Image (cartoon, rainbow, N blue to C red; front, side, top):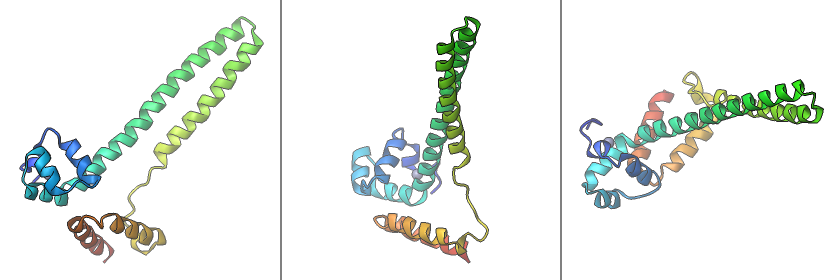
Length: 163
Ligand SMILES: [Zn+2]
């Protein structure tokens, strides 16, 4: 079933449903709560849930870091303005305080932009031979234990990838 025809994907509470499914709500319970058949929920969970959650999570992480950078840059401008004014008026202690603030904001900005750059990227080539991959594979499949269909689907897809 395509996402366009999926009752869960089309539901106005889709994000809430996905969040509930991802945190252990059963197909039956979700179906009853949002007035859908458990089969519709099951199909959605198997085919659409992980993709949707990954997109939402990625968006949230990037969005959060970008917002923090915007705010830090606004703070930087203010502190810079303070420093200029303090220097014009010859107020040494105020200048020093402003410089300390600027230094802290620069460190913060470096950390925030570093977080954006350090986000993991998908490695396709030779990934299956690395120890990190084996570990990730184990963690991933372990986490999918409570969702047998998703577990099977992911294990199958990983098998294909590793061939
Ligand atoms: Zn769906």
